[in-house]
Image (tube, rainbow, N blue to C red; front, side, top):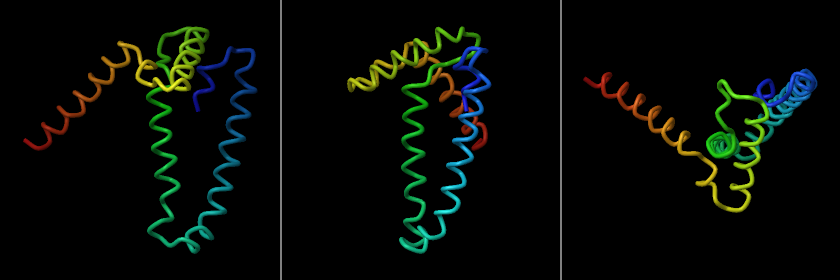
Length: 120
């Protein structure tokens, strides 16, 4: 839930309320429907919807959501709109700025260094 960073103070409480209501409603629906769905398709395929949602979420997080640290709400919203537009026209690689690419490289380098130190 990133509503606290994407809305001005005037609308923040309403946005958080709506998003929390939506999240808990979806959690209730998913937990209520999972066992019948598992009995219908079997244990092996019962996780397929979760895998698909996770992959779509990764796509959204990487290509559409901007970095929000130390930034004004209006700047964040404008960048999110620009990223959404570039994804909607079929150019998701234009959505990520050069700073975002450098940040991703730094994070991946940190992760790979952590794994190499574990293996040694």
